[in-house]
Image (cartoon, rainbow, N blue to C red; front, top):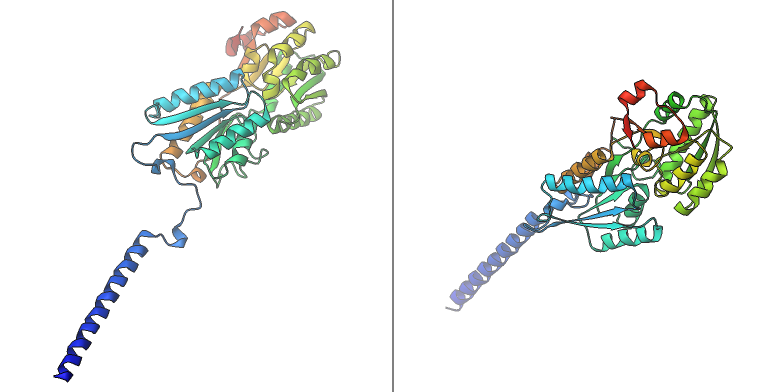
Length: 349
């Protein structure tokens, strides 16, 4: 009897041990199934499309300063987002303008980072640089960044490789100088006005200087640090040049009215890097359509919101250029627009 009791007890203990092992194995199996292998963990920020069902995606939209080109981008971006299905019911787009102040810009981008936006859209180079620094883990789409490599946003525009991509407003400098030769062939010296603190401007100015050196054109320059200095910079070059040239420079663009007035009084043409700068009083440019650039930026943003990895979206540059000439400015400075150009160019007043 004693032997039988011992035998039964042993059987019960064995069954208990087996049951315990079975439960442990099941728990271990479930944990393994729910946790990804270390090699499968993505280094990218999670796709915004992975947010909870019905929850709006949060987009931070930041602009360095108010001026026509950048405003066109912002407005067309928002409208195109609606067309693509990201209206108020699906997306919460928070817009902020830094009013040309770098500290404001940094604060805006830091706030976007703190709010854990699903995506940041930055208009112009300073905005993109500030966003990249303040929110390194949030996908970033830039717009109107002339030279994203020089701005250290990407190393290869064709293969961004990280979580930053966007659209560039770069235009061939030689086309603007060819237009200068057509409209004002007697120009021997060009006055260049730009902000040394804007990477995009410095990059284009270097290209312009190289072109001038190779084509026997002299140049003088005046640099500014803020828009209040633009008028004085222009006045300092009057009498030293026969034409002005300014690239896509946000600081100068925001003071275009004062710049244009100095040029008109001196009967000097201003060749610019953006159509908005011509619309705001400059003389002529070979430029891009900033409304189209805004739409293009929205299309890239939508791809990311729908789950396309940012690293697979190359930087895009518009390839369709238009000649834009301001007729009112032409009349003010006494330049006649040749008939062949007048018929093919976009004439604004």
